[in-house]
Amino acid sequence: MRDYRFIPYEPDKPLELAPDIRKWLPPNHLALFISDVVDTLDLSEITEEYLHLQGGHPAYHPAMMLKLLFYGYCVGIRSSRRIEQKTYEDVAFRVLSCDSHPDHSRISDFRKRHLGVISRLFVQVLEICKEAGLVKLGHVALDGTKIKANASRHKAMSYGRMVKKEKELAREVDNLLKQAEALDEQEDKKYGKGKRGDELPEELQFKEKRLAKIREAKLALEEQAREDATRKGKSGKDGKPPEEGGSGSSETFEVKPKPKKQRNFTDPDSRIMLDGATKAFTQAYNAQAGVDCTSQVIVCADVTQQANDKQQLVPMLEQIEEDLGEIPDRVLADAGYFTAEAVESVAQGFTEPFIPSERIKHGDSPEPAPRGRIPDKTSVIDRALRKLKTKVGQQTYSKRKETIEPVFGQIKEARGIRTFLLRGLDKVKGEWKLVCLTHNILKLWRHLWLDHGRSAPVFR
Image (tube, rainbow, N blue to C red):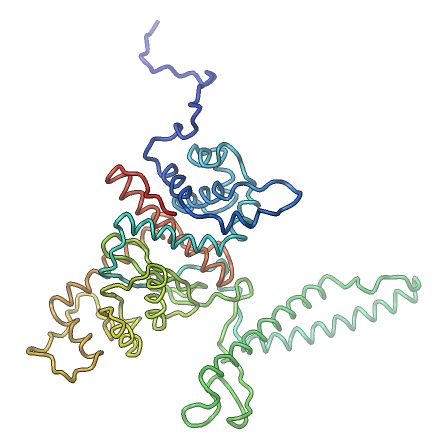
């Protein structure tokens, strides 16, 4: 008989698990760190909502639900169905849920219901990062990245096509209604009256619903065009109605969208945007982030419908000041953020801007800086651009790429977050804050537990 030297393998052997559920995981596990961080957060804004609820099934504790969501987002599992499944199959999720298994619909409802509060927890986590020494605000790099909307670009339609399709569908609906009326008359003669009047043919119901959707989208585009015209003023450069498509006098004109202006039926707030990485047009949002260059901690985050970044510089820096009570010493951003007004505003607010006025192609060297003392009458803009041409300015600006691009790479590649789950600008803003919040938790975990073996600082 052969004597195999194997470690005993007994599938039917009963296991004795540690009574302390935290012992099921190694002491430096990410899930345990997230549990400790959530336990230090002020969750009163969420818990107060459950104070006077009467009847019905008791709610799961918000701390547990947040731990499941935070851990799921950290490891790239965002689907409520997959999170529910993981509470059965994955030890880390099971530890965080204390061996309970919230239904996916309750997880999804919790995220939607408290998304605004969850996004505000971003500031609390940022404060913890600051206490841990990860937020210096010496250099902050800004950039935007296109995140796909939860909608296909093939579900969008241009205003010009809406006008044409509306007329076609209106004619088809009218013809189908006439056919239905004729059929009703024939059946009344044959069977007598008694057939319900709301029994519309399936084809008619489909076309009526489609017509209603197109009309709703068409009205929304027209309303947006009127709002844009109001912001720009009632007359164009030469005193004529705005280019957006008007007729009549400069005082009373009808504003209409451009024929190619599009609206998506699935997520109307999303926009067709060019993804800089793939060079392909996609239905997306422009996700913004400001990153501390010393630690790659995200210090400000937002989402915009605008494809370019020109209007985002000042609001992002204002968010940093509002959340942390400080302003960065220097801000680094690419040419997409440059406008004379924004750069001047930043410089006058005591933050040193390093923002080129034109895109610097890869491999190209900027023009050498003029020699000699800067003339006293040199404008703020010229001073900022001149500084970028110096060796010190170039070294400072080089921190931008090495700081912000790895952050987006970690979010998109390592965690697989390339598409928003939620729809609508407000919900997408909240989800992006959740993504950035969990990015900061990962940075904090690596800094405290993995690098230094310390626990999370208490935040109250």
